[in-house]
Length: 120
Image (cartoon, rainbow, N blue to C red; front, side, top):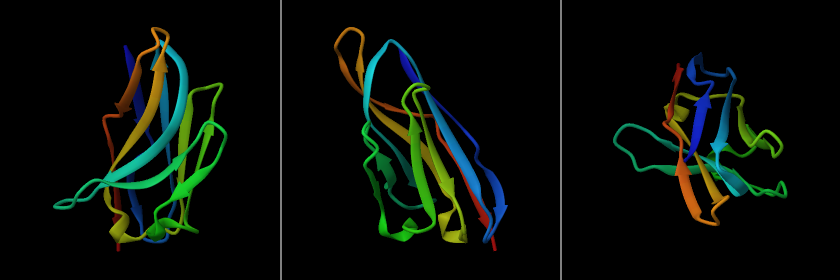
């Protein structure tokens, strides 16, 4: 089994910062892209940021310059540093990873989600 476990969500005032972490565990051979998605109430889930195993990053326009994603391949962990948070960043944030298992199966795995609430 492969799983992603997230941590770091919570309540913060507008302009504040939070750091999310997501650790992968299980029968993992390699992890390609790791990313963060979010889903606000009444809205569709959207990509926030992702990062390849080589460190190439991609961000949705609304978070560019405020959020930074990084990863530690040895720890199989991806991070999302969120600065200058806005009320519109309020959402459940989900970690996502594209994983090749030790049995050479390709899986797209999701974390359980962590709630980020930004108060005005």
